[in-house]
Image (cartoon, rainbow, N blue to C red; front, side, top):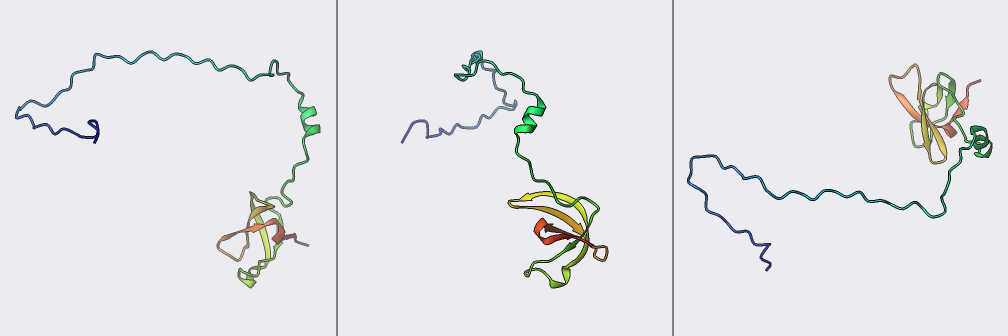
Length: 124
């Protein structure tokens, strides 16, 4: 067994005064700044115009439907078959892997649903 792992039990003092600790006279050493060398090969960074970045960037896919648009929701076979119908897009949600998601609401229901873009079509 290690000496440090064994705690010594001290007898309680019978004094009436509250116990006070003396401040440690030992000070912590001052921190030294650590200089990290720059990555090799990076010497100068030149600014690039926004137009050049936009031209090189791939075209990002965006939501197909917008907030306030009326859409036709086709429910999946797992959910209630009576859920299909006309809904209004309330909020755009981030993608869930392959599909964007939307929060939709039917005026006849008291709650909102979350639907994937593949479940929605433009209302004609």
